[in-house]
Length: 523
Picture 1 (spheres, helix red, strand yellow):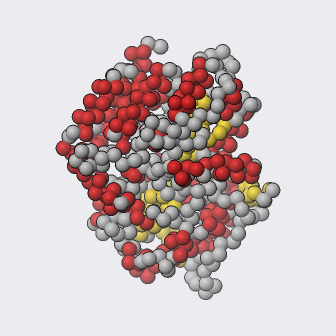
Picture 2 (cartoon, rainbow, N blue to C red):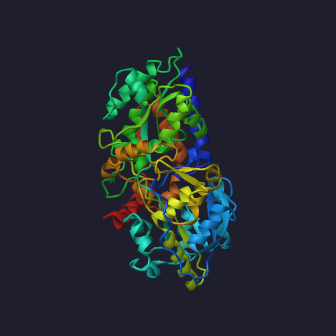
Picture 3 (cartoon, rainbow, N blue to C red):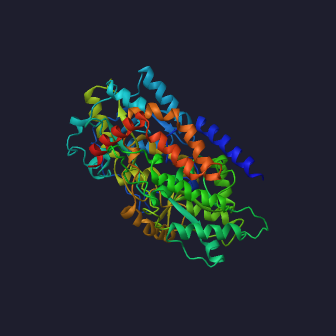
């Protein structure tokens, strides 16, 4: 294929992509099949110990939440038992996840709020504006030191409450999620085929992938194997893991003390240069920015790529799928690899947004809602959320819960949306379809991520100036990244472009605002 034609196609795709893809990054699992649902806990499913008093009336709660699978019947076996155990009567408006941001903004603009509104991004400008206008309860005094809400205190990652603060106040209940989530995997059988060791550095990783893509690992006689697979811009889910190896998860300040946005740091530029080399050597697909998520998943599941950074729990499912066409397939999670300025270990923010209570709700009802949130923020409820009722939704096989056909139908990702969950680092690692020995080994192998990984600080801090300014430049910047990677512009030209953005007064003001919020939340 003509190089200039490929480059031009890539740039056009980037410009189109920037118009249709939002900034949110959802880590929720989509689908209602067991293979699409990560596990929370694989111990015996105990009955929740936070039982309501016998004479206590169920709390009625109206919620608006995102939907990641079929809209559930709240009268089915799972939801009937959930409401019984949690002493609640739920009325839920399920909004398709792809439409949720639009619906969320419309509801805020209308002022007609449900009692509890889920926000998947706590730095969303429309949410912050509504909070400042008094649309939601300030929960700071009601929560106090959390002594009256012991589960929300002990079963939430310690830093989350600080991440949630706006001007020193707490307005939301965190939707707890694990730190350990996305990691870089690789086809171990292909490493073995070419007598390559498991990479421990980014240089070894790059060299291994260059060898694999040039060696026809699937033996089909075609030069069609992708080294690093991704979807969206740049690789979407995998960006932070790679950037971490270049020091991009650390705070980078300019000469004026401003906190530079991660994608405009020298570290990100170094990562772009690294991808440029891989693209030149055929490790990235020629039109990698055009690959959609469903296409990428299908490519990986059919053995056409060596490495793909996604949720760790998916490894077992994909390995089983790949074995259907390549029986020797073995997929492993790579350990944190040493890069030029860090390691390839990215920690997800330990919350996927928060739940906010409308100011129109009376204070007594607010306390009832908080009691429900605390009552359900246990590992027992979280485990029930993944496996349902023993004998109905799951059976025990070798001490591990295995979903029944009814369980696969009724126990879906939508079950996550109506409570805080209990923080744990298992739910995005364990796969309910995998043998216990596999899950135990996988969990043990990734614990090191919590020791060396970093979260992206920009997931919990915001800047009004950045929000107003960046959309004007985002498409142009994405185009420049694509041009740099495919070789249409030099790295010097790309660096000069980034320097030009960083020198603009509005960017400097945004960086000043970022720095102030960083100090408030992290220092």
